[in-house]
Image 1 (cartoon, helix red, strand yellow):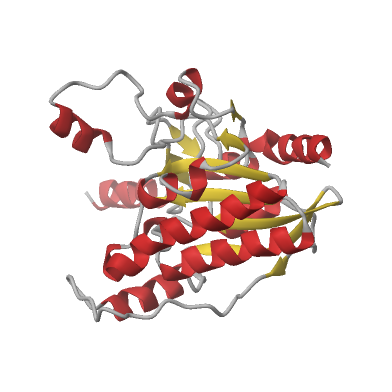
Image 2: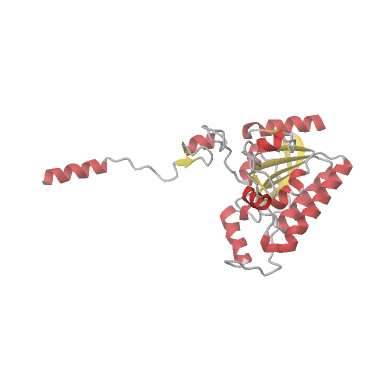
Length: 277
């Protein structure tokens, strides 16, 4: 009997312990994929080409020349003008998201170079309160557009947002008009604006600067729209077409200009900037 117990213990000791986080489940094809393989593939699923969400800093590293980023207004932070509270005070929620994301708000902006060509860039980060557009996001986007206008360099915006930030109420909604006016001044002056849409781009962001680009690019299978499909179906009392609000659906209906895989995005933007010089 003792011999039997020792044998079981020895077998248990030989079991392979798989470290946590070694594998990741694809949200699209549901396959279990080796995490390092996904990361080597720029966080794109090697099985189905699904583009995982990435942070604003990861996005910048993929797009711009190394060491060229000069950040604009890095210390700008949201306040709590309405003293808003849902399950917790808005001020606490902001602080939690700053610690979680390492950012002061849902956008990073600045002056960069892309393969030697100067540009102004604003990149949103979905990990900060779902990329919601509050006063800081609107202000930084406007200031980036003003920088592009002052230096007459192209503006590139990368959107990832669930919409307006409800905790700031009307202050959030006002950003749509402010940012749209800034983009309008770029267009009047002939300064190019490239908008890149990633998964997801919704609400006030899609209803303002995200869809105002001279050229609008989307990553494959990105969800893009204003309201979500469930809300639309409940409103119109009809079933929506397959893949409604996916980038491919928008391209086929003329709402965006092209779909570009993440690995080709830097080169595609560079070619466009070269043509617009």
